[in-house]
Amino acid sequence: MGKQIVILNGSPRKRGNTSALVEAFTQGAQGAGHTVTTFHLDSMNLHGCKGCCCGDSGRECPCVQKDDMAAIYPAVKGCDVLVLASPLYYWNLSGQLRMAVDRLFALEEGAENLLRGHGRACALLMAAGGNDFDDMVRYFDNLTVHLGWKNLGHVLAGGVNDLGAIQGHPALEQARELGANL
Image (cartoon, rainbow, N blue to C red; front, top):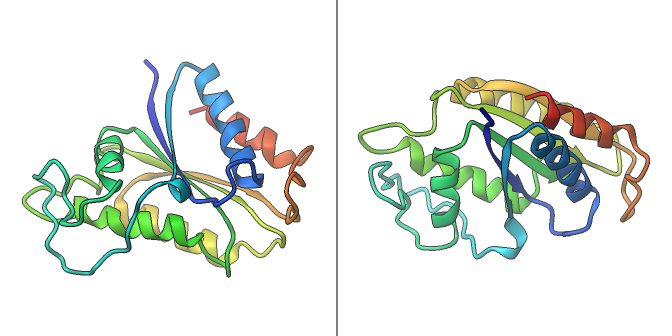
C-alpha cells in the first residue's frame, strides 16, 4: 500500500533548484505508488507563529490564526512522510518553511499530541549556492529526534546558486531514488 507524502516546499521560486529536487522526489515516489501532496509555501497566505501557546490539536484547525495553514494541518496529520524542501538561507531553512514548521507546533498542543510519534518519517531536500549544510543537517536531525520520526535522510545539492544550475546534478537522482525507495 502506498504512503501518503506531504512536501512543504519553502522555495520562493516555483521553477528553482529546490523545486527541481521536489519534482525528482515526486516522480520517484509516485512511480512507486505513493501519493504526494505538495504545498508551495511562498504562494500561500501564511503568518508567523504568535507564540501564544493557545493551539489545540482537537480543533479542526489547531492554531488560533486563520490562514492557509488550515490546509496544511490535516495533510500533515494524515501523512506517513513529511518532506521539508528549502534553499539554504543563512545555514537554515527559508523563512517560508521556517514559519510553517514553527506553526506545526499547534499540533502538539491540547489534549492529544498529533505531531510527535505516530509512525511518521521525514526527509530533507535542500539546494544551495555553497556546500555548508552542517548546521541545517544538525537542526533537521534534532527535529526528527524531538518528533520521534524516522529520519529518512537528506538530499543536499550544493553549488547550485543560479536558476537551473541543478540540471545534471547527482542530487536529482538521489531525490528520485529517495522517493522511489520509501
